[in-house]
Image 1 (cartoon, helix red, strand yellow):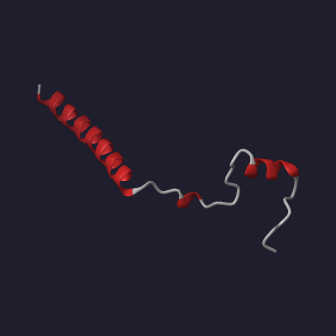
Image 2: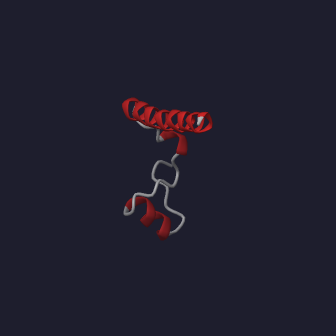
Length: 60
């Protein structure tokens, strides 16, 4: 059954026209490694900056 008929026309419309991933696994959409590393760097810099601000606030 490679060409399964849709259950109704609404799901067929969502899949074909709007590009809705009805049957895809959410874990498949990983970002490419360079973009992932940039995100890790930005989040890490934010966390370290907040930590240093917190430590500096208690030193005064």
